[in-house]
Length: 315
Image (cartoon, rainbow, N blue to C red; front, side, top):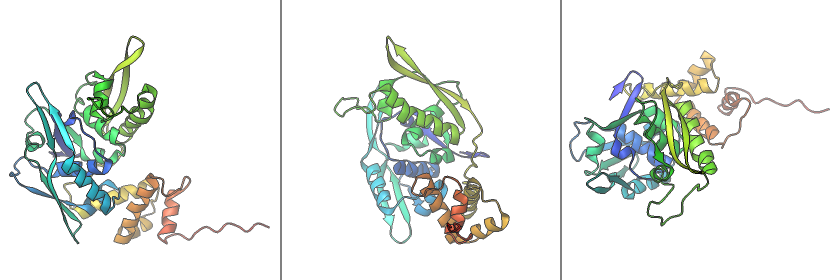
């Protein structure tokens, strides 16, 4: 389903609250796959994911090995979906095939999970594709999914910290693997606060949370939710990819404060420069490029559109 503010992914609540663990690369692949799904798709449909499309839409670059590892993990990683009558253990992908020389991955969905992804008549969650892509923390992505389930309310239901940690794969319900972030202060710092900041800055939701005590210890959590207009431009999925890519590139240039029309059009007219723009923004975001004062100037220098500044010689 799509609207004027960008494509929505609709995801069954059983999937939203299922227990699973995914890397950020896996999540990007899954979100892109979900955006391709249609209710009328036949059983056995193969979905073609173009690696360059995914990179252009997300502004992130994954290398070939990361994609191989991600799809391999998605083949074997399981969702655990439980209701009053049964527990279903199911993988997302039945197969993943790489077409060499084309940069294309053909994905086949496991038939057992298809009804949860495609049956949208009731009990579903909707969330925007660009928001899902914009979150870099895997915990932010998961908490955003959970919060989106309650976006028509002012708050979520109350989760025990145990249940939320299980949903975030920070705690093994069987107790076999050790629990992560056992101290509430560490759980807040590295999971909750990071997620809240990213969600509030990048999505259509503004959330907060309340930790609830039982006796002297925190036992439960409840998220407060308000809908807001996201600051970033939506990904225009209904437009041709070239238009979508250019719009995303314009947004990246604006973020770098490169607004000169002549420079902007020169960069957007050359595919090489657009590729370098996405690469630069990714490296800047991940700390591989340091430019605290003027990242836009550094980019222009790197692509040869501005001469390097020469420091005056000391007397």
